Image (tube, rainbow over all chains, first blue to last red; front, side):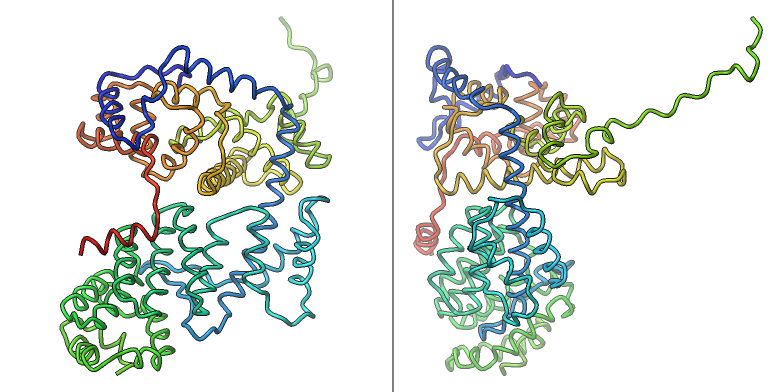
Length: 312
Length: 208
């Protein structure tokens, strides 16, 4: 792989095509003098700092990320044990696998290691106090998810901490901060799954607030990003029931049924969640949506009965 | 020539100590880091290069080398030869790539001001595509989140300058697919489409 790149004519043709867009940044700098000036800027930057001092900065980053990881682990444990009244976390997001149950002991080990190994200056006083509180079994208090995520973000900003904090807000019915964090989480997700999980969260927040149109749009975005994700189909079906669109509700459940192979097994957590929220869900319905729900449950998708029997 | 008597035979030389033992044994992470960076005895630079190529990722090679060295130094005390050194180092490189890709995403999302890349290859990409080098970092973020097929097409057809027909044959692709993949990669590198959640959702509602 050479450091001088010659574009083939067929590649150049594509570059020119894209460069014609007004929001493109391709072919905006002319080769020659203009580019040389920019490269000279770069040359001025290099060599200003020795390799070993740069490497040491990377070592500090490695320590910071380790501490941030430990804090996120504890936040994940706390979040999974959180009984907030707005549902519970779903660990089985796709039919074929589920996120492992959080291991409090592994989180405690990560915290202890982070405290023992981090050199002076890697974490500030308040973070060290938080680490000490997390590692003290006598405190008897569950860790504060938001405080843990905020401390992790200060050390090493990440999609994961943002997502955990947004999930906490969603579980506690705090719409505005959940959506604000979700917006940033979508921009910083690593892959399509991250993006889809965040859109699902957005859909759930809107669904909690009975904004069915927005919930529908967000769940559609989640499905587009990662079609195998289970939750968005349920949100779609629930939204369609509320706007008395039986056809769309059936279509969403049919697709969900196809993904799980018609078996309720992968949806056990969802069924439990609906059962836990049955009072709220029942209260959110009017006469028309109630009738649609009954027709959907009696309809051709057998899973519908298993999913929604708790709210009938 | 007569064989020398057995008693005069030279003893077998002791098996040479693996390089990693010498480099990773003893000292603080900072000291080990210094040994790793000075002369690159574990050939981390070329291993990083190979990883970027196999995954078709655009990152500053120099930063990846240093971050990998930092990971190796940090965990050197716990390494006693298992898994094999090549596998162990590959794990560290993988972690370093993940971290740097994630950091670049965060940096771009925060709207941070980026400096021109120090890596000659990234500078060459900017030059070939006529991009201001300081906006390339943002393009690389989008590129690294693109599907592998798009990234691989860019590596093969742009960085390596491969003949498209040959490349398609070797990668079991068609010229249409390769073109679409390459276009997607160039789009990621060179088009600034910013996502605004509210605007986007308003737009979707307008379509209904």
